[in-house]
Image: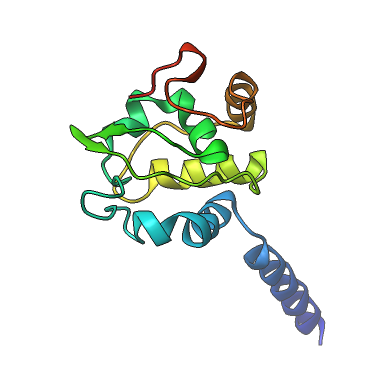
Length: 145
């Protein structure tokens, strides 16, 4: 009987920690719900319409602007891995700063990518610089192409 209490306590602790969500689980969920429809589950994009996220040079070359692209979308051309894409990206304005951090970290460390992570503070600082609701890659003197 003595050991039953110990096993019960250990089992409860394991279940509690197994149910706790990690930022990567949240990032994967957000990606699946908001990004995969266009960028595909594996991040390969959609032909000449939607740029890939898997192995995308843009993720590294424009790291600081990525939170703004997620929050405000894109209404201009973008060059990814040497190819031009012109399809509009809808804004993710329903996503919180934490959601944006989690989804960017998921994209930067999954889909074949090994890119630097974002901190919540970095995401918030980036979003402060681009508060314009009609964010464009060439707005406010910032050229993201």
